[in-house]
Length: 523
Image (cartoon, rainbow, N blue to C red):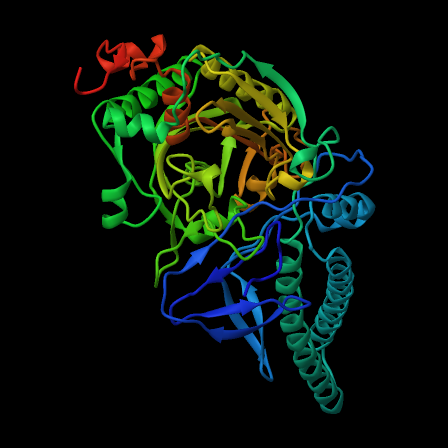
């Protein structure tokens, strides 16, 4: 069963000896114990129905927490308490509810906006009542400071006691209401760039086409056949050792992976990116805060049983957490990172010839770019990331297209996403090799990453103290610089030769010790 926040909800499947929420019509969930098997959590894709385009201000919301601790219990129902809170601008949501509602529909989210607004109004009213009672309690306390008749003092003592009891009850209700509001509001996905096409994945717009497909004058092979003949990888042995969709790289394929990683890191560093290697196990809360949330029955994140930790599906997650709960100096922005990591994905539901071989696997190496910047600069850096991807892939001689992805293909954090799909002649189709997303302040509001503008502070304080400029949330962006298995598919299939060899693109040769081609071992 899954908690129904499909664009950004939360689900754990088969959690060992744990109580996991099952979907309900509100933020109150029923708990049950699930079987003793591997604990898995998900991020997946959903599509959206077509609807008229709309234009909205750039403002970001938040998505839900996965792990939630049970709180107060009413009969057989327990209230879910979030383990962390996102800095959600509820007033902005209320003031722009029409735009938010359209965005929820376009992104195929089942976030309950009406419930969020109802809870917000209820919370505001409850806050006012709490403040009123606090004021009355203070008035009673002040009256008791003077000289009073014993009967009058006793009357005030009773009144104060009643006010304290009423206030305690209301304050407890207010905490529960805030938790309920937080969980419901976290289901709302980020808003969407007004130029993003509305609809399913096939509604995505072609942004650019680079190069042209290579013409072969001999029967072409797919990367599986090429790899077998050149002794480059072994899926059968890996299946025995680890299971399906695992693989051993061998011989020149190992060198080619290292060459791709080092070349990509070198090129990114030339463009001002700081290289990182990252932890590959992170707290589940960091995964959630980055917006990688369940939106269906399938799952892509491996969670570690009996812990609050997950294997990463992308270096975006640990890099996003590196400045968590901090204020960055504006002078330090933009912060540009290029991170190498291994990635782990369950790829649940993936099957068929379109995903065979190295195209869709459970473990792979990847180089990821990540930028933290000022709010007004994120569109510019999004273009920069796409240009870097285009330069990298075109320098390798690949034919590819860049797509402006439709609302139905956007993950919960993405304000806009461009995918790169390269031609894979052996598979006879285009395959995604990269994506670049502008997440605006969606992730930073959850991760708590802000910056303080360096504008001249004012000194209007009555005590003469300097008033610092108010902090702002950074904008975050990410882009795949090189996903190794799919890049191997592209290189092997596009640069195969009639004699069975594979030519190594010129930019990679210095990183392979000057090797220019991979030849059959019998040669």
